Length: 437
Image: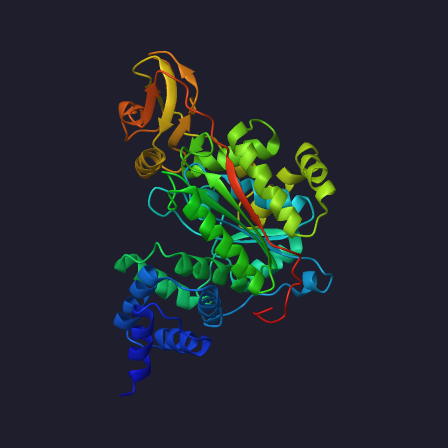
């Protein structure tokens, strides 16, 4: 039979064996051109989700997916030996890091080509947050994306249809077949997009906790190690942080109010301490893998913020993508406010990040992009009965429903580190002209 090779490949994975590079390429090529049936790929994905993949298989799948479409390049930067960096977050609530870290790293001299996604479930999407700024477009053509990165040092855009089309098909299939939580499939999906986007170095922010797709630090660490090792096989520098998502990251949750939070952070108007810790950790790694010496990282970062250079770079990004300085300066949250109040005195012991994310999404759907939730009492905060836990901005969700996402107990919980683990590449990898190093 013509498809005998495919049946044999499925049997190998079913029984826990490994497929060679040529077989992975043949499967992915056939899936994209329609000669391999979707049912067979679904069966393969399920076998992988149950049996796993070794690193060589993950790399073969990644390379096959990269080769299914275009690969971007930045010749004006590469000829000067400048590394282009991208960052990836595995998804969280109140995660405004990208909107700040991208222009901040660029202002420090490290160009950032950020391919981002939209909201998925209870998690926010960077594209939705950026598009809340009037006039801003994120559907840049590949040529426009490259020109912007080479021109002003940063861009945040959606993945174009010609970048890793195989991943788009495979991800949709995994979503329908319950095979999303597979370390190998997750890693190949993430890294293939970063390689196709032309990144020479990558920082992965892998969330762990009840508000994340990876519930435990151990699972997030396993994914982090795979991501860094996989990137290294393609000649890319990489770091991965395992960061806490037991509660929302920043104080603001909602598309537009997170854009306001990013604007205020870059201008120095207001800097939430928990969000600031996350931003500085991510930017440190972006500059490190971008080639900045360790002793220069903190001074450059603080100077870019203090001088206003990071904010100016953010404005340049907005202007390049259709917005204006005026629209950024005039951003404001919805004026309709109600308070979510504590029902008893004690300490905030937990905040249900999933519930907060879903409630913020409902508020945005009902009231527009500048509705959402602003958290005022973090985990560990002492509160009295009747004190404000969070502000409900806009209409559509009762304040009491938001208050129910907070647990108040008698004793303060033990503090958790924001960054639980760090995984770094073993050595500086030289950007490669090919895919494999």
